[in-house]
Image 1 (cartoon, rainbow, N blue to C red):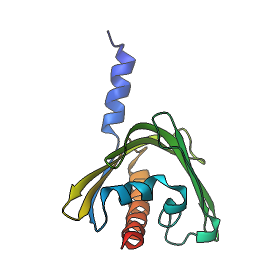
Image 2: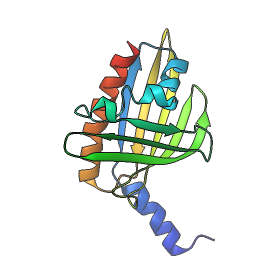
Image 3: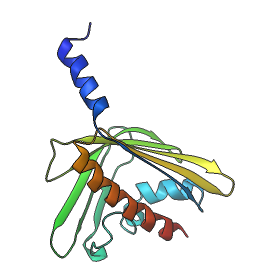
Image 4: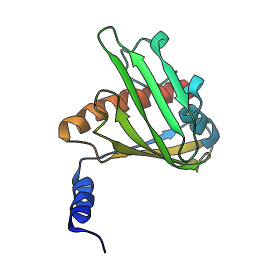
Length: 155
């Protein structure tokens, strides 16, 4: 039987803010999947628009239990995010934990779903269990910039 604190904890996580983005990309699911899982490809699109591209580093091990880490810098600040892959279905699905090095206690979860759509891919990014509305708003800005860059990198 679940303890009262576990039930409350699960309800607390479910009540946290989340974001969902859906994009149709003019690339195959395999190409979009590679953009998320190949370190040389992810550094071409991930991160803030004002990040220095020469500052990017990525370590990615896309398997259940594998870890990822992406870091980059702007002129003012250094950023590093990482997590652990919870589900991996090549060319279809990635589910991973997400935490910035500056706030490791604020772990959230990202799900990337890829569906074939004609000669392209329908990609849905669901970022859930965000710490609060300020974290949601900051991640929304970040994801919008990154996904715009992803779209351009796949064109």
